[in-house]
Structure formats: structure tokens, C-alpha cells
Image (tube, rainbow, N blue to C red; front, side, top):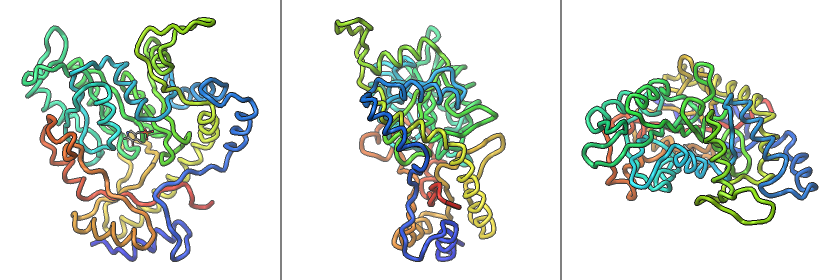
Length: 385
Ligand SMILES: *Cc1c(COP(=O)(O)O)cnc(C)c1O
């Protein structure tokens, strides 16, 4: 049984907060070189998408994640959109994803003119279940001349886009094996995964291409921003080309050879990101300490806390607890938010939204179970500060 008042007092104690002070879910920590780099950026007059911080930020993120290439975008959503185009997704294709995710995952598929197909998640990762993926494909897909098709709709199934929920790794290796078997491109939505590692590899480096978000609520921020990761040099070049209006280099002429986008991150945002990246390891340590405190408290009180799995080093971006049922969840949400401790339920399932209710889906019982029970609790980098 969840003891709500005891839990809220504990959260206040951990965050060293006065009785009525508002505790947000996740706010940025901007106490490093952010101001210094922003000033440098302004002084240089290079405030738009050309400048030294943009290139430096790409190099540093590639170095940090171990990806061969990192290509910045103005946000995570359009980084996902471009990732799908880079994976070869075309008009009318189907892209398999999970229903338990933030809307941007699903929207990006639609921006790429493709149809999102929903398969279930695993209860212990909150990410796509390789078993559910395999079952769906076994029943619905076949290879025609080496390409995967949905036997029923006759649409091509071009890509699979699992998501690493709250920075916890999904069973990405098993998913990669299934994708390979069916010749489907693996595009990771690693929007929430900056700093998370699975079996020694950074999230977003398992698929052919992936995207990370640096929105203001993520573990590190560029204000708004995102980045594409890939080990494929040709794809990396194409990513940069498409994100800069597909402009062919020329001394003065406007030459464009494709439908491109104005998706490149401005230097101002990259300056912010560089300062944030310098402190990411500290953020990770601080968040790990917070997660350990939460873990201990919830264990003592017989509440399920979403902890790290074997082989995983999680960024603990947003801490999550799994409550008994929807009733307990709703009571906790209303009591906590009323008392100034911000909590949020996990997302409503994508297949329940009016835009996606007719989309193809597998059996979604794990997603439905989690949807009713998972709550995020305050997770900012703040303890000991
Ligand atoms: C934040 C997020 C995005 C989108 O990132 P933005 O930078 O906000 O556009 C995409 N997918 C998931 C799962 C996210 O959490």
C-alpha cells in the first residue's frame, strides 16, 4: 500500500525543500560555462547555424557516445524525422514502433509519410518487446525480393523504431536480430537516452541511425535541439546535407539537389550544449545518487521503483514508480500535484489518440498495464547543491 504523505515527505526531504515549495519534475541545471560560451557566441556574431560551437558540439557528442558521426538538428523530433528518411522510409511504408512513448516518436513517422504500427513493450524495460515484434512479423510479414512487406496491407515495412523509455535501455540487441532477419532498418528513438549505456555501448549506437533530444526537460539541454547518431559516413553526410536545405556548396549560386529542411541547430544552442556536455558526467552521478535514495525508500515501503537492469548503466533521466492500479495512481497524482510535488503519469498510449486509433497494432497488454500504473517523480539534478 502506498503511503502518500510519507512518500511526499520523503521527496521533500531528499530535495531539501521547505513545506510548500514547489518541486518540479525536471529542470535544467545551468551552473557551468553556459553564460561564458553564450557570450562568446554573441561576441562572434555567429549566432545562427554556422559557427565553431556547432561543429565542436557534434565532435564532442560523437566522442562521448562513441558514434562515428553526430549531426545536430533544431530538435529531437526533426532529428527523428530525418533519421527515418535516412533509413530509406518512403511514402506509404509502415514503421513499427511502440504505443507507449511520447507523441514525437509517432509524429516523426507520419512526417516521413509512413504509417506507424504499434507492437507491445516489455513490462521490465517499458521499451519495445522483441518477442512482440517477432510475433507480429511472423504473423503479418513476408519477404518479397529481400524486402519486408505486410501481407495484409501490401505495404512495405521499412523500419522499426523502438524507444528507450526514461533512459532505460530496451532489449535493443534482440530487436536488432529480429530486424536483421526481416531486413528492416533499425532506427532508435534515443531521445531520452543521453548518458545511458547498455553492455558498454551508448544508447543510440545500436541501430543504423538514431536521434537524441536536448529539449529543456531532458538530462542535458541546448534549449531546443537534437542530434542524429550514425556510424555510416554516407548517411552522416546526407543528414547534414538534408538538414541544410540540401544546398550544394557553391561560391555564390543557390544550387539545391533534393527536398531539404532547415533543421540545423544554431550556434547559440550548440554553445549551451557544449557547456552542458562538460557537466553531463556530474549530472549522471548526481542523478544516480538520487535514484539510489529513491530505490532504498521504495524498497522499504514495498513500492516498485523502476531500477536499473543487469548490463545497463541508466542515466535515470526521469525516475519512475509502478503503482498498484489506476485508482492508486490517480490518488497519488492528485495529492502530490496539489501539495506542490510535481508528478506525471506515463503517456497515454498512442493507439488511443484519435489520430492513431485505426492504426495497425499487435496485442498491447503490457503497454496497457504500464499506462495505468507508471508515475514519474521529481528527478532534477539538485541534491547536495
Ligand atoms: C523528447 C522526446 C522526443 C522529441 O524531442 P524534442 O527535442 O522535444 O523534439 C522524441 N521522442 C521521445 C521519446 C522524447 O522523449
